[in-house]
Length: 382
Image 1 (cartoon, rainbow, N blue to C red):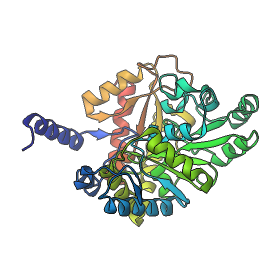
Image 2: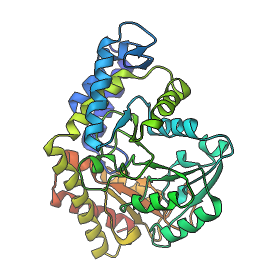
Image 3: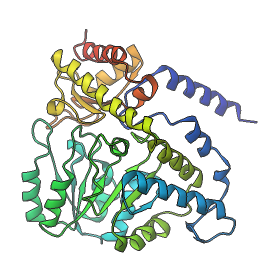
Image 4: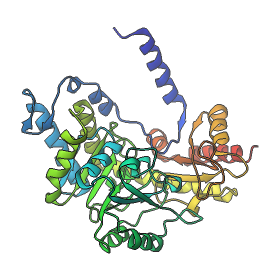
């Protein structure tokens, strides 16, 4: 019998998810099948190691499961190799650092205040403690300046360059990053966590032809179980990457989560997923048009993805986010904008994403127009 307190919390959380308008760009709603597998008997077994080379007996079905997942995901992303064991995207990044870097090596990633991620070398993260960390940013309107990044790379000659972001709305030029990395012999890691579902559905360019290694979460636009993965093409990296995941940075994989990931890979390979991600981007661009028509500034003046970074003008991002939740049950997160005059706990912007609510509502222009209007009114304090 479930504990009464836990049952109460679960019921309340279900109600929250059902009733709220979720515009957190890093969240989504997994299918019933994904959630069922995450709570299945796959949770009961240790499966340390890799298929056909486990440290425990009794893993034959786990070998089949993992091999099947690798088969689907490599086909989905048109790559040669995959590790689907990482517990999260940050763990996937950590494994790459463990495999290919030494302490004090020079790395170059996107600055957190410009839209990067904690695990790309931020001083607040373990990645910011081990290496000689440097950062590239964006221009005043939020665009990546590849010429400036090139000049930084010529000066720094980093061992590793990290491309990818948590709050960059536009298409990242992965080919340009490859050319920049090659100019000094750097390795290139692309963290596609935010864009992985869009890439799987063909509406955002893939980094796989260009990157040495690609990491991702599996629960954002990919709409799967919470977790991470690593993808690559060159066989020479295989042993280092797999060893860096286990035993390098993790113990036994969470095979229930792996099962949920595999289901999401399968779902993303179906024709209706391509329409889903197309709708995600279309609704995101539609909302940008509504904001712009009503005098609300958008970083980069638009989006190529599910992400929109909205300037909150005289109000702080924190105030706007709190008011949207309390007045309209719309959930967003405060977010810094380029050259933000406010601190990270106030910010001068909010980040929104359309992936979760397109899952719920589909391509419903009336709905997304209504949400946009409420956001505009809140920013203008009407």
